[in-house]
Image (cartoon, rainbow, N blue to C red):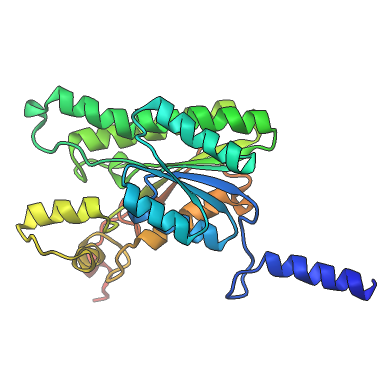
Length: 291
């Protein structure tokens, strides 16, 4: 091999390496993230960018979203996922900017109304489903169209929740919406697999996003409760990894795996990021003690 070819190979390898020396897993990929302005979406956008992806953030939080997009060399678009035309416009932005869409992360969602099922206001439920369920369907629909046309497959990832796995973790409306997301993702995976498009879900638990922290503030009556305190509570009572709370970065790493070629044979799967909470009960540790 000539010296020039070695230099070229070295430059190409460097382009696929992160600053910490690890291989980039999304080099040249184009990713659209709804609800990407903060929380899990923002953490995922940053991680994707570190791994070489071109990022489009679609959100209704314009200032936060635009600032983040600029900081990672991406693009921002105001997008209300309840409106199909907004989601379609976000997908079209990917095509006009780069000519392709490889990854769709349907992350946008709201908490919705709490309270008794006997007092559930149907107009409030309708508003929640418009975002949490219809918004995901819009994302799958329009991402799939361009991925099929592109002929190179793709990865569609939807955010669900531990609330879709067991009852009593969230409001009735939120639980309903997150269970529905599991269903549409699995159904879409059955159709889109023939086009090389993988459809998966990530189900977090106890992640101290603004949504969860606000809920804990109301429940505990502590308006000054910080995200770190919520993470500590989860680590003590909502995880088998005692003392280890969840973080938005934990979820972002799971999304990165499903988006990358490392998960090339993974589809119709629900990757649960819960510290084992939905798989085991950790409050009877005395049964493991000898004598």
